[in-house]
Length: 175
Image (cartoon, rainbow, N blue to C red; front, side):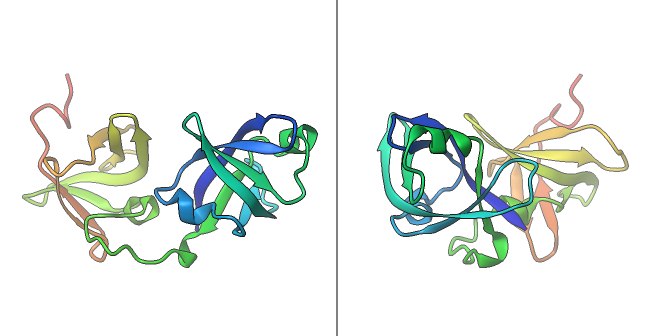
């Protein structure tokens, strides 16, 4: 399974630098000088390899120089490229309370008494924090957004495929 770690937002300057939107919690390791990145355009399957020549932070964004991308035209040509890693290549987390998005997607969500709520369709990252987008039990459409915080999400068992929640009143049935 592929996991997106960054996206080329735009070119920066005339020497081929790229402004990258980071989607990983470890950019220093993922975008280190000498690292080989695998990238593809959205809705395309072809992967291209890029080697990081330089990386620096600038105005809240990561600026990258990649081998072979030497001018603005070349940088503009890869605008929108998604940098990805294969989830099989990721090390297990040392923290039992940290999860990769792909580990949570598909898990069953239930209340503490065992009542099924639905299944995790996607993990959304917002300025306010992470949200679980849950497809309601027995429905093909619809979405319940559940804040991924300890006060609501009481336990996560990837091994058992279950997330247990204790939602405040009105979260599951807003009216």
